[in-house]
Length: 540
Image 1 (cartoon, rainbow, N blue to C red):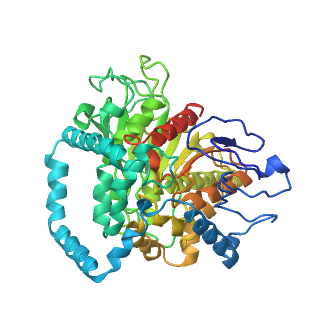
Image 2: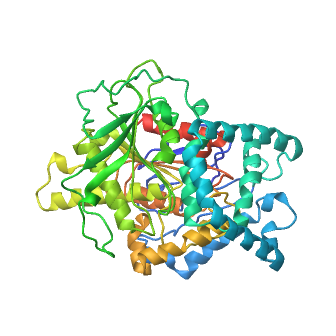
Image 3: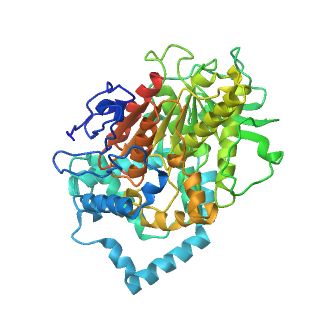
């Protein structure tokens, strides 16, 4: 396969037309229709300098069954490919030894255990003080000040030695030297939740587009607006340009069946309530809305922590002229229940109910909604569309189809989508050695919950959106790093979606960590990826 460096490609039945140069992007992809309707070409990302081929899918097979993806040959192939790629990377901060080896020595192990137990005693009050008593604006300023102090020192003293490759930005080298050490300490669900709740701290107004909201009060409402079930709040309190509206609405019916039926639950009155954050940029609601689904491996994440980056994306997807009122896209961030207190079925139930609220109560047309899912939120976005497509097919088969039955959104952006809940393999197994976000400690804490919550292998396959049907799904935009843990499953999703006729656009950056677009306050690669995403959304 011919290698292409620094391109992003638009992939659909006969299209390959969205090409633009970006410094750290590399993608080479062929689709079945590009090579002939009866052929089955492999999907791979290649680097003409290193000759790496990280994902080699099943080739020359007319119909690939799901079981083929769990065969010993396939698992061995993807594991070996990931291991070979690791050998070409600058691991362990460029040190001649692996510092994590020290944690296996008894004195160091005992010290870490003591520190861990001490933190368990004091972290709750410390988290509470930082979150509830230190103003958000002060937290943002302290975080950015620390970065502005550290980055020049790293640039002067260390330079391009700690990142996976010399070609990545100096900022990413510096970020690597800060975050890498987290893998040496245990990670609990509580710590995951606290970390993701502080995401907004890393997205201060200085990093937003230079646009000031003209909204003073939420009294100006367009004809399609229904804010009777929202409590208006001043966005400035949350360091937002626009208005923050807290959603609380009790739904009477849920139209779209969801769930893998492994743990049937009765739907209580409480579970028919939609809650979340709705960010409105200007004096009237936008006609087009981003439906933001946060991530956190289903274990962590919340709507409040995602407000800053979500508003930024809504602004970037607006009109080029910031003075045109109402052109930017409002953003709705629904809440959903988390594992292990709840089940995966509960998460998809909550997200689907919130989406139906946006359509039926808020009055947004489905084609004017773009789903944007981060990591496990990307999995929920695919599960939501698969449920909508299944309901539409069922209505057509029974002759009950009407225009109201078609709730498919205008498209979906999947950022580092976590879509395979079976036993880890390939990049999911091997790249924890260098991924800054999903490292060994996070992996050891989070992965066991897959089996605890979902149970058997069959249930885990059934729950994994990557193995579901893509027939009738809206266009997809997949943004992923070639060297993050979910890379293999993201490429498998792209392959299966294309084979089933879905219009897919793909952006692949090299040497980045999981969900690197969320780090836009620190690294230029993240800002490039957000621009890629926003341009795709503008076109949909």
